[in-house]
Structures are given as structure tokens and as C-alpha cells.
Image (tube, rainbow, N blue to C red):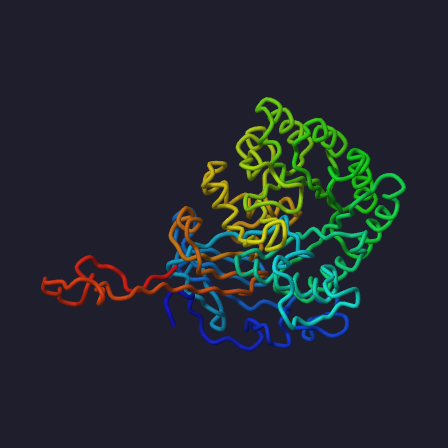
Length: 473
């Protein structure tokens, strides 16, 4: 086994990671309801986590520590190899030497109802739709794609996801119902919540959308949202969403490019103080406004306590940007005004972004590489700020905090944002995903090149420079 993969002793079957063909896997086809055969009953608690010790992990502040986890929370953090982090003899120990241990990222802005549709369903895909040969909102297909997308992002490290799901029109409530079934199938692996997104909410045409929005919340949507910019009455749309949120005590998450500062200021005035909270995004249009105008809009958002969720990796179905336009919101300007800024991935291989990766570390990398944030601030945008926008508890690598963790091969945060393949993901105190990458190099001598008259160095080519034949990433 390459040493790039964290080492641990053999585990009982209950701790094994399910394969896609395993009957308990959330990606395995379910029965008529779509629930994975091994999924627990609705409302059942997650699997009881075993004691776990993460040994020799490096923290972002440079310390090397052992971390003991139990009951889904961090129980102790102590000096690596010391006695300050004792654990029972039956605890699972994982050697994280060479890994950086971080609070796990979260995904605050996904679109799982359309994820993985850029190329259509593969030939022979299960779940023929009664609605036509190609129905993007067929419940069976939506559920399977949502589960696959969630597992993909879980492998990247996102243990919690908020996905926007279209309701009304041709989608009805089918897509939402399918995503909620996927959420149940993923029980214990990742936390998945849905935002109900209606097309219209005002006028005669919006009456059905408003009724369906309320029904979506009753079904289990954790937040309400949509795109006011696409409604004939954007202000009325926003007020309708806020009214439903106030009735049900749920969060609000709206799509807007932010290019209309008057509309943003009006949103801030009516949404200020609403709890559990209001988020808007991707707001890349703010970057096209004069700086003074954008700064005033940012101040109004900050005063209202509204979070901006930017999308450094690309769009999510809003009208396309002008050629050469900014790809993300002006994060530095927003932060300077006191706005809480989180970062999400947006579209995942659908028509809005056919090559979307859904990797939170890539979103952080793009923020840092484009000069919108330093590495620490960029990672905070996909972890602490993302969790805050989703109403989740804060995570710190200290005793008492939730055990939502990501171990990435590397020594520094800067290096891991630049190149990070090998990852280990802990959710509710349990290892739920592992990725190991090993890079190998061939012999430095090119047998097809010109003859080398120099005598070979002892030990083989490259040994005088200490060049690796294998490296861990």
C-alpha cells in the first residue's frame, strides 16, 4: 500500500466504505421509492461512530498533533505521540503523517437536480421515464444523479451540501421529491439540504408557483429561494419568498447577479434581521459596477446581515456573462464593507458549466489565485463561512467541536490549495471517504534518444540529484 494513503488497521464491516455495487451504497438503485435497501428508517439516528484517533496530523498553524474523536465530536487534541490524547485500546488509529488536517469544507450552492446532465444519461442507464425519452426531471434519474453528485463532492471533502432544486412548471415537485430521497439514502455519509426554487411568484402566473413553494417547504425543503431577476416583478418575487420564509421559519437563498444596486438595496431593506438568515449569489454583476456604486451596495448588504455566496468556478444557469467579464463577485470589496462571503461550486457538469468539478478546494484556489483572498481567507470561504451560510455549527480542531474534518496530503494550506489529490474525509466522527494518489516517473534515461557517452552514475539515473521515482499527491 503506498504511504500516500493514510494507514489504519482492518475495520469491522460496519466501518467499511460502501462500494457503488454494495446494497447499502447510496448510489445503488433502490426499490420503487428510490430508497437504498440498506438505508435506515426515516428519522433514525446516524450510525454510532466508533472511537477514532488521527495520529501525526499537521494543523494549519504548524503544530503536529494527535486528534481523538468520539461520539461524532472532537474529544481531545494533543501533542503527536504524547500521552495528552489517550484513547481506548480498541480505537481505530489512522496515521496522518504528511497530511494537513482542516475543518471540512461545505458546499453552499449546488444544483443537483441538473447535475451531471451535460452529456445526457449514458446508454442503458436505468430508470426509463414515463414522461418521454429524455426528461431531465425524471425522479429516478434525478435521485441517482443527486446521490452521485453528493458522493463526488464528499470525496472532495464537502460533508454538507445545500442544493437548489427547481419546483413548479414542468418540474412540479418531482425533482425535489427525488433529491429528498437521495438525502435519505445518503444518511450518515453526508448532510444534504434542499432550497426550493420556483420560476414565477407574482401575478396570475405566479399563483401556482407560490402554492407549490409552500408545499415544497412542507415536504422538507430547508430553505426557499429562486431568481427574482427572471420574474416580471423582481421586488414582488423577493417579498413573496421572504413572506413564505417568515411563515415557516426557514432560510432564504436567492439567485441574482447583483448588477442592479437599487434592487439589492431594496432586498437588504426588507430582509434585514430575518432569521435564520438570508444569502444571495453569485453577485458577479457587482464587479461590473463602478466601485463607489458597488461599495454602497455592499454596505447595505452588510448592514442587513446578508451573506453573499460567490461562485469562482463558473455560473449556475443565470443569463451568461458578457465575454471577458468577471467570473466572480468582488470579494475583497465585499469583505472590506463587512459582508460575510462564502464560496460555492455552482453547476456540476450541466449545461451551465459542462466541466464543473464541484471541488471546494478548487473554489478556494481560484479565489486566491485571482487575488480576491489570501489562502487562509479563501479556505475559510468554503469552510467556516459556507457552514455559517447554511446554518451549521462552527467547526474548529479543538475539543468539543463537531468532527467534520478533511485531511489533505501536504504541509501547508498554500500547497494543498495548489495541488491536493490524496484526501481523507471524516463526517460525524467517521471516515466516510478516502482518495489516494501516487505519481510515478519512468527512468530518466530515454532509450530512444541520442547515445550518452558519459558513464552512468552509481545507483541509476537521477540519484545524484535525489530525484524521486514516486511521489505522493
